[in-house]
Length: 408
Image (cartoon, rainbow, N blue to C red; front, side, top):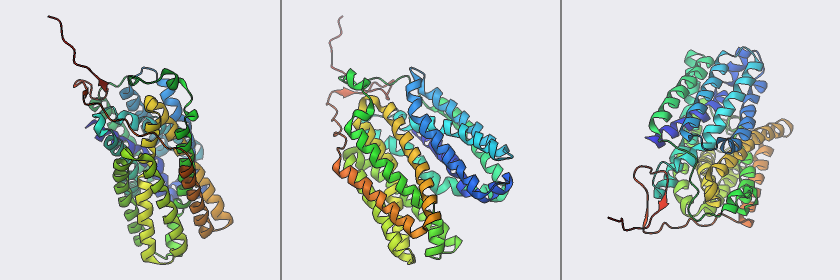
């Protein structure tokens, strides 16, 4: 139940971030601004999240993570409520800043908290489940928000997300156990716990790979609809179907990559990078052929759907003694790359067109693959000793115990 509530929270968080994509035109009309100006709201949230996610774990100290997540969802609700009542671009900017703060806290902590809610053998599955809300938001969240907007207006869509965030804030308080500061694993090097994470080679390599790969993805994916409409000449209904296929394959990729990355994180991430590069290149080559376009989009969804969880596991395996900090750093870099990709994509489209954009994105994906091939990956996960047990009262804190004789 705890993991399920956490997953729903990430679902609402990412749906809140991406909702402007589905309601861009009516929102721009309602605020009396251009669609391009309204689209900057996505970049604003991405930048704020990129700053918030790494900062939150450093500022928490011993504060109960359950309370932090609940408060962050209330902040997210406030951001959505401000979007719902905004009458101009100024208040929209404020609302997206508030939303970015809540989003950074929830997304930055969700994967680290998920591993503390289950037995160690189920940690990878818990991370996959928590992060599945990210993939589900593209499949269900944004289309559902668009339907609400079409039926009741774009303001109602933001208001609905605000209500959902408040409900989930209560759910987090009720479902999660108390989660104080994580316990440093027995035998962990205290010096390593103080050393800057960027001095860890596998962390630096993983983050560099993520920057190029996520930038490549969002540079191209932001304009996938024009590709499908202009090059493939699909009808709006067919475009919706193709994007649904993308989302469904993304969900499958999320859980498949989580299981694979738990054993071989580096190999899994490199495979996903190769898949994204191949999918975008295929779309650039055969984007005028409907059948091959569908295959390309399905491959793209499968590969990108697994990237968030596989990259997360790469990070936690690289710094197992500092899971919260490395997760916050990872989410910050990830969301900054989203904003960078959307900005670069728009720049290339305006100056050169759709096809050069696709080839540029494919090239960036190849660069990320090269970084991963030449750099070092995370060390393999240590096997738990046979006598390692998890205390029944606190399944999220793992210790190794040795049987002792109790004196009479």
